[in-house]
Amino acid sequence: MIAVGDAKLASIVADFPILSHPTSRGKRLVYLDSAATSQKPQSVIDALVEYYSDYNANIHRGVYEIAARATDAFEAARAKVARFINAADTREIIWTRNATEAINLVGYSWGLQNVKSGDVILTSELEHHSNLVPWQLLAEKTGATLRFIPVDHRGMLVLEDVDTLLRGVKLLAISHVSNTLGTITPLEKIVPRARAIGATVLVDGAQAVPHLAVDVRALDVDFYAFSGHKMLGPTGIGVLYGKRALLESMPPFLAGGDMIRKVEFERTSFNDLPWKFEAGTSNIADAIGLGAAIDYLDRVGMDWVRGHERELVAYALERLAPLEARGLAIYGPKDPALISGVLSFNFADIHAHDLASILDTDGICVRAGHHCTMPLMEKMGWPATARASFYLYNTAADVDVLVAGLEKAAAVFKL
Ligand code: C6P
Image (cartoon, rainbow, N blue to C red; front, side, top):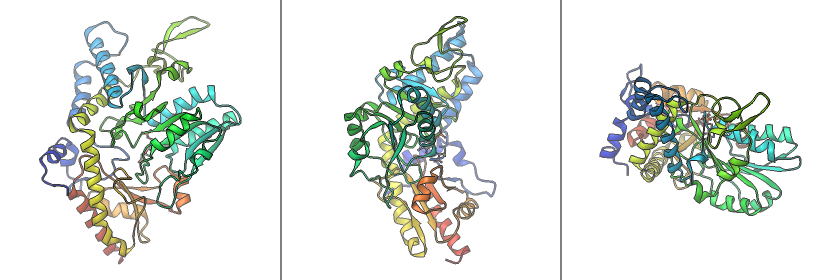
């Protein structure tokens, strides 16, 4: 069981200043919304302050000392990302604003060049809008069609007919971990079969990279997208990983400064990777901040993060079980081995937003709504759910506060 007094966990909690700041009602902050965005350790905040106070300068341009230092720190952060996900080459790491922009980059650059009328884009019924709407737009522009891997009542992808579903597929675009249910996609069962038929594979890893050790080479995917802010980094910085040969073959997405080699009045030749895809002044500070977040996760260890979240989910399921008799419905596979640290639920006929507001009075932060997965919610028949999502800084005591908050809600609503 999770040792609340565990020294490693206690020191992790102490690294996140926001967790020791009481809410305006004087409650301890119980942050259970890390799937929306994670909290930041002091070392990430310090990296941002250090950049702005000691060496703020534009990169790849100035020859003076602080500009060189900024360029080095920015490119060192890229190298950290490459190593963190086991990319073969730092040139395969493209900075974007977030996972959404990374997926759109592929849609516009690779998609418009490669997807033709009659092609099939295979995705799933579990997807976040960010890995669905870009493909709807691409299909509309090109005349391609969308196809969906179905999800069963437990929130698991139905993979029995995956070879049939893959027939004629040009692009497989699939999430690694569902943000609404936490379901981990068994990529090893799908990606090799997609590759065998020559499909290109994009994985939305926004909810995976923060919580699991991800190895893009072992997964053998073509593109992998994620956001810095869900993995202890700042907002405004995200990553597109792409296999080098594929990125080399793609046209630029945005055009302007930094992505060029030579510009004449009538034509332009483009910069090498990765800068070909990074037009304009980059988000220097936040890339450096993400590098500090990766240093932090490396120190903790991704195996520890995964193990801790598994224990937390197991403990939460055990503590929440008695409330099921009073109308608590927990969605998803309810098996800590199959999900990352996410639990979606409804409590009898209390609206998820009301539930979240009641929990908020006790300092508990959960998200309520459709979680940007409207088609999944509609298919499951849930107008909304409340979602508790855990991360490395959550404790068994946080779960206890959540359970007490739900008991309070049951009393308010006389369940
Ligand atoms: N999900 C959530 O509360 P951005 O906004 O680009 O950083 O991430 C988009 C995104 C893409 N894919 C998945 C699986 C996601 O979960 C998210 C973001 C947040 O669930 C905010 S909607």
